Length: 139
Image (cartoon, rainbow, N blue to C red; front, side, top):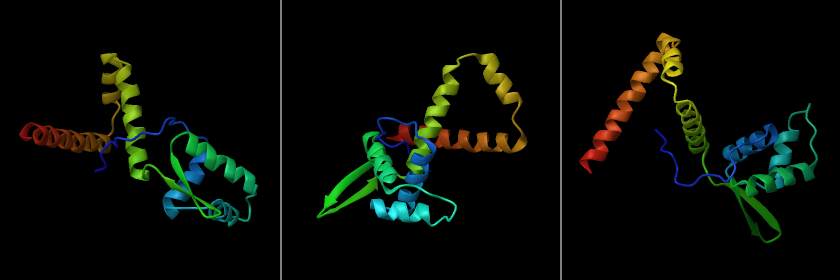
């Protein structure tokens, strides 16, 4: 289970190309513009300017998703959160949005619409929440 990280990017919303490039960075770990550009152009149906990759990397850095280090003449980008941490942040934000509705009738209607698999997932989540509470109480 991935805990909600202490660090959160400044801006959570990402465009499709930003998400694609972030996915590449998570797979490779540390990248140059050329690494990302080459990976995208490996698909023969894709075209993307080198400068566009640079722009997206800079934008992801400004949004707080990446860090950039200069080593000699080379700029290297690394993620500031892992993919699993990003998923935890996204799930947390969605849950907060759902809970912000605050209308018990809407929550009940949602609960009534769950299928058996969803109910099993909710039971597993409830067990993890109870275990986390017990751990907190023991500390």
